[in-house]
Amino acid sequence: MKISTSLPLWSIAAPVVAWLLLAGAGLGASEILGGVYIFLLAIGLFAGVLAAVFHAEVVAHRIGEPYGTLVLAVAVTAIEVALIVSLMIAGGEATTGLARDTVFAAVMIILNGMVGLCLLAGGTRHREQTFGLHGVSAALATLAAISVLTLVLPNYTTTTPGPVYSESQLAFIAIVSIVLYGTFVLIQAVRHRDYFLPEVAMGDEEIHAAPPSAKLAWISGALLLACLGSVVLLAKSLAPTLEAAVVAAGAPKALVGIIIATVVLLPEGIAAFQAARANRLQTSLNLALGSALASIGLTIPAVVIVSLATGWTLSLGIDVKSTVLLVLSLIVATLSLGTGRTTVMQGTVHLVIFAVYLFTTIVP
Image: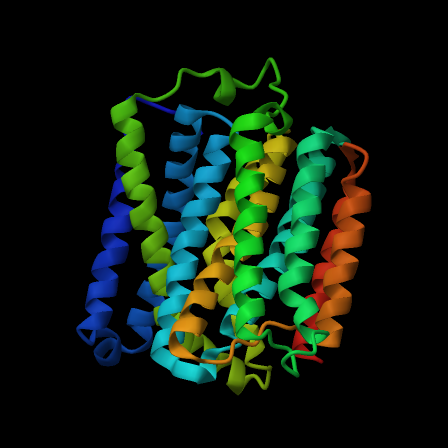
């Protein structure tokens, strides 16, 4: 992407059109026009995704790494958390497993689908890619700890039977999640920022190009938030149609959550894919692993607050099949990203695990 002195018209029009489509849906246009309006909503959703990626790159080019990837990860996850909390409040106690399902789907999509696709695309184009081992190791260690403590350990505590924590345990795990994620952000952005800086290729025109002005970056930042908000709300609007299609196909309803999580993560996924293709694997991994950490580190404390405030039982523990896939994913990620060099082999392994995750969701 080339940064100019002004933003292209399509990047400004996309979020405006997306929000107009949302307003139309709220006024009942989807009921009047039926499938035609659903198709328009889908177009608006993907236009919002592409615009979000563009504005995220503008902001990232202005503030530099690793702050650029951190901004996109936190922005997407914050809006995702708001969506989950609003659905929990609206759905009541019947939605107490929503956070678990969403977080687990996000982790599997990022750790296997996003990382695998980036490694495969980068390895196909550049044969072998390198990255800073210290930053990735810190991210993987944090991700392993926070995911097991929030998604696996609840199955084995005895104060409260079942895949749930007691109120005191919930409060403690929420604090632990904040401490782990907050410490990682401190390491990434302040104390050891050099661990997450990519090696800059001499011929990389996008990196060496002059950064956009502060005014342009602020405008892009505002448009980025508008795009991300429209993407999440459009995904929510399309959820009933997706659910009906999944049920009609005879697939489990859990597939709907995976599809919505994929759509919400598309801006980060496309940005990570483009970075890997441009031989900036460090930036790609910063985006992917940072998103997985933000997904757990911000979601769990938020839903714990809702659970404690309402008195609802929050189900966090995943089942045995999911536990096996999660542990396998963490082990493989540690091994494949443990040398600082990757090829198409590592990407293929991650994508195979992701395919198994999708298949066993549809055919449990």
